[in-house]
Length: 360
Image (cartoon, rainbow, N blue to C red; front, side):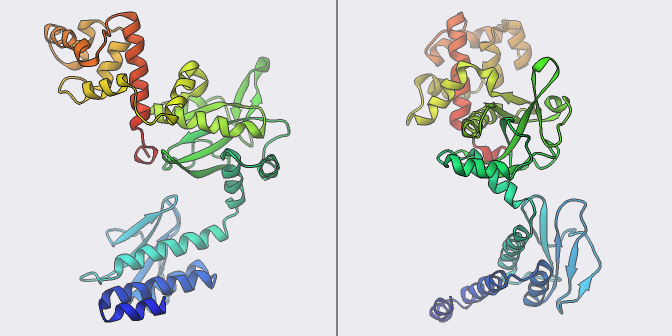
C-alpha cells in the first residue's frame, strides 16, 4: 500500500489520501480494535464528530474529533451510510464536505461491520445455515452444521427464502443467513416442521411458533419438505424459485403447491435461451395495452367485461384488443390449451426476469 501511494503521490494527491484512508481503517481492523475504538479513530481522522446507530431503536454512539464520547443523537440529515441489518454511520461535518468524507464513511462501515461479526453470537448459526443450504457440501459438514442449530432430534425442515431486507418478524427464533445466489441475494431461513394435531406438519422454529405464521409471513418462498440434512439444498432451491415467482406480491408462494410447475420452472435455470412463448409474452408486455395482471386474467379465463373493468376501458375496446392478442402471442389464449400455455409462459417470463436483490 505504501509503495502504491508513493507512485500515485506525484500523479494524484487526492488518490494518495484515499489510499491512506483505506490503510488507516485496515490497520484498525487488523489490530482488532473495538467498535468504540474504530469510531474514535474515524472521528480523529475526519476531524469532525462521528456517529453509529447499530439498528432501529438502538442507542447511538457518538465521538468528537478529539475522541471524546458525546451524548446519543440520531443521524438526522448528516451525511450517512447504511449497512447490514439497519445499521448506520455518519459524519457531522459542518460546512462543505471534504474530498474523502465518502471514503471515510465507506471504510468506517466496513470496519464496524467486520468488528461486529467478530463478537456476534449468532455468527456460528448463520454459517451453519449457509453450509446446510449449499449444494456440494459433504454429509459430515452438514451433520456438524446441524448440531449448531437449536432443532429437535429427527426434525424435518423447510428452507424459506425471503428478501434480504426482511429481518426479524418472519420467524424471529429461526436461524437465518444472507446467501448470494446467481439470481441475487436472498435471506435463507431454516424452519423445523413439528407434528401438529392429527399428525399434520406445521412450521416451527425453536421454540415452535403459532399457526398464525402462514398469515403473517409476507412475500416469501416456502421450500419443499427436507426430511434429512441432505435434502435441505433441494428445499432451498425450491424456495428460491418460489420467491422469484412471488414477484412483488405481499404473499408467500409454497413450492409444494406448484406441483409439476416447480420442475418446469427449475428446468429454465439450465436453458441458455428463453422459450418462444416467453419471448411472445415479453413482446405483449412491451405493448401499450397489456400488463402482467391483465394477461394473467386472460390465462385464468376472465370474461371480456371483467377484463375491460380491470383495464378501465369499454368492453368493445377490450374485445378489439383481445382479437389482436393471438397474433401478438402466436397462439390463441381464448382456448383452454392456450390459457394453460399463457399461464406457464407468464410464470417462465417472471422467472427469466426476476432479480432477488432488486425485490428486497
